[in-house]
Amino acid sequence: MMFVAMLLFTSCAEVSGQTPGPSPPPPSPPSPWGRRRHSPSPPCPPAPPGPLTATVYHMFEPKYTGLANKDAGDYDGEVAFIFLTFNPFEATNPEAAIGDNVFEMSVVNVTGWGEYAECNAPGCTGMFTCPANITEYCCEVEHDVYNPTSATLPGRECARDFGKTGKTSNGYWYSFPVESQGTTWTEVKVLRRIKSACLAEAWRADAGGCPDCQDLASQCTADCIKAALITDGDDSKLKATWDKVFSNETLCPNQPFPSFAVIV
Image 1 (cartoon, rainbow, N blue to C red):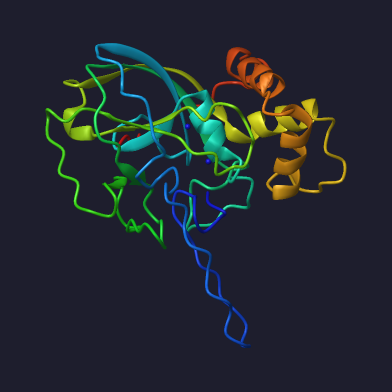
Image 2 (cartoon, rainbow, N blue to C red):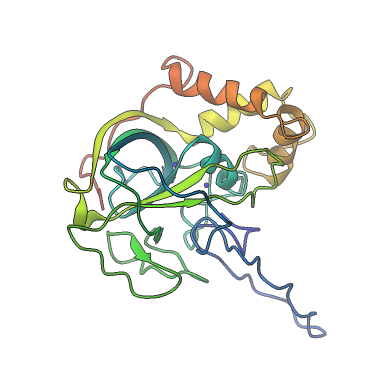
């Protein structure tokens, strides 16, 4: 299973250079709930007791596969995230590029849900930092040390609509500590592995092509899709395209797994 306004929500925040001039006004206060990769979340109903089976989605660079040490979302949670990924690829924000990455759709069994951890890709800089010279994602909880064990439950929290979709449901975000893989959670199967651009192109086509938007990876295209496929919080058109993309292997073919899979 997206990347923040872009500074407040993406997988790793980035600060661009500024030209000399008068001091800018103070930034707006951050949301009290944070972002996909940042807790605390909005008020959330208690997690249902396990064992449970869930279908989750995660978008990342093609060199990765699997859920270990990564965050994911259900449909609603992923949509709350990915509308801020309509941007050109940047090495300091590697997951925030819907035109360059892949989606994996996985079935996972869990014994229950626990505390959500923010896991970010190597190369992230800004609010979250993960060294580019490592292969494992970096995980933490509210910018504090995260020391999961073999008994640590996978995490769950309510998603927040930082993509400004206006949907009536924002769904959930999940985290999967590698230390407890095979004990408290198991990735049963990767059902689909597709180019994230294929989803974006399908949404764009069903939105009428967005002729006023030149690039696929642009906020212009994201805003066009939302305007055409979400009406007064009703995202049934958006969901119909999503379901079509993930069920139709001809429309969006499965992509090969990395030769030397980086799974954590």
